[in-house]
Length: 287
Image (cartoon, rainbow, N blue to C red; front, side, top):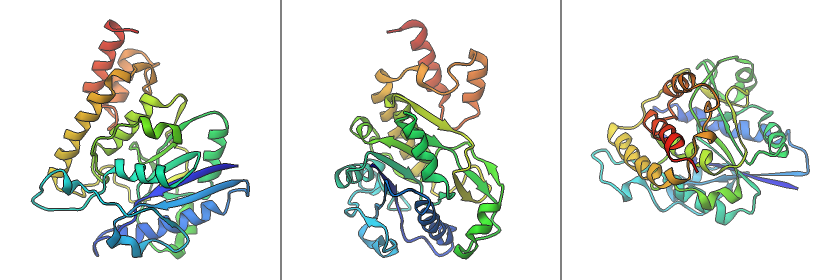
């Protein structure tokens, strides 16, 4: 029996936040996707949150031990916001669950009914990690009762990374420093760990498996000081991973040099500075 643990980070949103409805649609979409899975597949839904947010967790989902760390433990901010540290979330999930594979999705990412069945198919084909891009859906229907109508909306693809699937053996190899959730450089840090350590990673750029309500590509949610904080933490991640990085494992690396740098240049999760360093490493420091 394949056992999969899907990790989400629910929290009580502000009254004017789109997460007031997005989270509940996410919860319902998870239930519906689980309903499509055969009996020989075990899907755990693990909720990682702070003690003050525990009441928002649905009764049919499992609670991880409460989070104890936040970005506020590592830096002072003019506008304090208690954002979780992804390292702690993964550590608690790894300690709590005996799943074979883990999934992490942002809390505003909902699932199409085929989500788990498609993931299982890819894992059975030998992949030990997946990155799945979402669809952007117009803000027309925002009630859980309208989820069938949401499924029917075509939407558009989105370039960013917000859904990660990975074998349990990869977690001890990850280095994520103190990167916090919900701020840029989270996606870069997570994806570069997978590019570095996964043996057979599959990037699904437009698979109609997840969606987000809202057509924006970049969404400003946190003050810029949090952006700077995560950027600083990303530099630590990059420095630690660099010795294990290989250009051959980066998407688009098989294309000619001009084409791949154009592709990287237009994608938010392939820092050009790092790509240049890896190109130089491949030319002058081959193993």
